[in-house]
Length: 357
View (cartoon, rainbow, N blue to C red):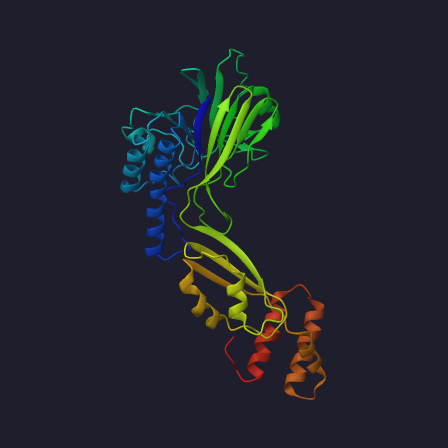
């Protein structure tokens, strides 16, 4: 049995363009800290192999501190490390993979064709992206011999129809005969899958970078034996992105309703908080002032609706009544348009005294 750590898609030195320059620099530093946690995990589990399936770096441009951190962390891993460069950090003579002197325990696949590395009781297969795109299947019709040894592959590629990113079909996986296929490219963890006799997985990215990468992020710890694989997801991320929805219908105190719906620890949460339900318009500035200190990052989105009884006031012979009648007609024409609801609520708030919304 082999004990394996499988990671991918670290995207070190991501620009974090949606953050302030100070916050972006902090997030890049936190990405580098992932490498130390990876090395610590390999030591804790007494791993036999660490497989890194591409896109460790976000691009060819790498900060010196990042390259140094990567090299130091890999050297601290007490077992062989195999890296299959992906479409973001593809191997080329100008890449960091070629420019640096890597530790002796690190093997970087450098060619566009499959390479086999013989290890005690195991053959490790891999290949590199050598450019930003690759339209051929990374497995290239691989059918491993039935020689009693474990056969494992570390590859960057897309299971499905992404033609330019190393397309892999279920048939390709099953036909390979591999015991385990360690993949990178997809940022959502797949869970352990199986095609034929071959187990495979995406670990997902180990640190979310936006609201398209939600929840806990990390790597996989695997125990691989002939015909049998177990996998454990191990969180590595310091911070996580979440989208939470809170229904404010009937809430006399919107702040109390929001706090009651929040998870216990929000200090490291980057949250998009969506307010729904029927009621008076909540004061977003006031809510943000009260809640923001509890989060690493917070965005509030108001999708609440006016109470139905307020719409009855459109029958009044007043300016408010005329406004509500016009907005009622508009909302009936565009029932799914949130802008109409917002216009009605903000307009009513202004007419009723200009209160803060």
